[in-house]
Length: 288
Image: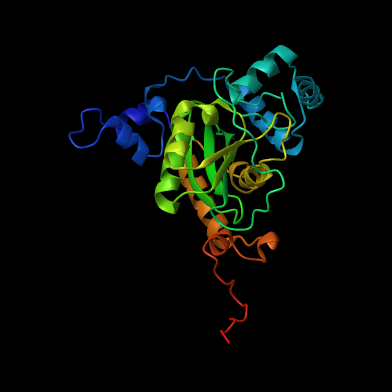
């Protein structure tokens, strides 16, 4: 959403709603309302879209590999330029996966709690991650909260900055709507290690788990969500504005939750698995 558009939809002098509340209702972070984006050239935005798409295919690509890939496609780029764009996108190839949020050395890192744990029930483990969303003339960042066992997306938020506000907002919505999980698992990104995020989990009595460095498979459920979302929705639509992106993602997530069956869920949808519903066509088991 452009700065001009944000100024139109958010009323600073509204008598009944604070700026924070208005931003929450619009699913944008408060900081993004204040933020003045510097913008990128059309050529750089195109490169960023290509980088993002290639990362979905080859998550091990670093700056060197990505630079070679783009040059083979006919783009005259050097490593310095690609490094800057990847940092702008949050794709710091430090680990074996796109690391959309850099660790903050001043934040506490929590231990990984899922080793050897059998996750079969809804609300046992939730997970979260942030990904880059390309548009025709810009980009945004998307965070989602997912229930691990059912694959259901519980909440999500868009932002044009990588601060913690929009992640905390998504977390609070999920806790309000669905109660709380026993464990919440994320990577070591600064959004998730921030005091605002971890204190929200602690206040709810949730155990905090964080992936170890290099353990890119630890949050694989939500990584698969990003891949499916981008290939089924984002890459097929040249979204112009933040509001178009939001509407597109909203429709896609609704279909994903309610209409997309998973073989790992006994051909049930995430919605059916989360609420423990029988999938259509299955014989009803009668009590003896």
